[in-house]
Image (cartoon, rainbow, N blue to C red; front, side, top):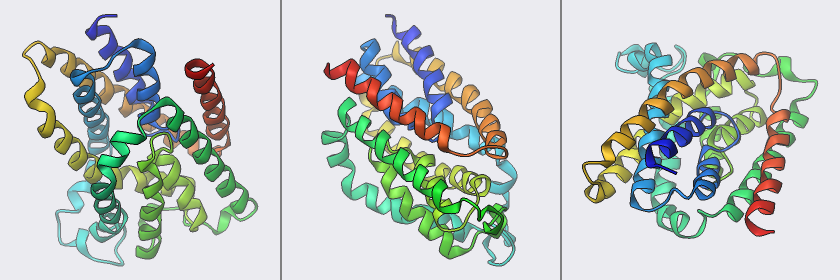
Length: 267
């Protein structure tokens, strides 16, 4: 398979899965292994297309991010503030820095992804079970999330460092467990993801960019553009979905994908 076709396929996969609670990293590892896209280019490519998907959040939530650069955006009691975002992402960024090498060395395999998919599914099903009959009591708007809830959701984000667990799966599930609705939890998850992922992606890109050749930039550019466009519409669809449904269907999908992964690679 040509690198350009691989870029197209993986850009679509990344765009669809980055913000759904199904683990984009897990899907990228599985699909990358299936189509044989590996090596230095593949490592950098994964970072670049993830950055493309993440930047779609900046477009969709641009008014939120602009507000963080104003005085009001740093005041508590006036909606979602920069302090909420910092509370949610700084602990994870610090912890990720400590375990980054270990994760890259030992957890990037189809088997560990399958484990993460199942564990993430269990978390989401447990969260849905806990709030059954109590949904009206949940915080319904991201502007009403407390600083304490933001911090707790950030702690649940630690789980997403395990490939296959999923950032949105762990944080939206965690949001439900601390009294925040799916929609408000998703909004906070996407906003909180931007600084974390931009820092992580730029770090990986700068560390590996010297290995690129001039011909690689077309592949990276295609993947970036496709991931950005697909992620934009994926977020819009997912937010609408959460207004009318639960996380259970994603949990079932994750378990089926885990079983398929184990069968495909190990049977």
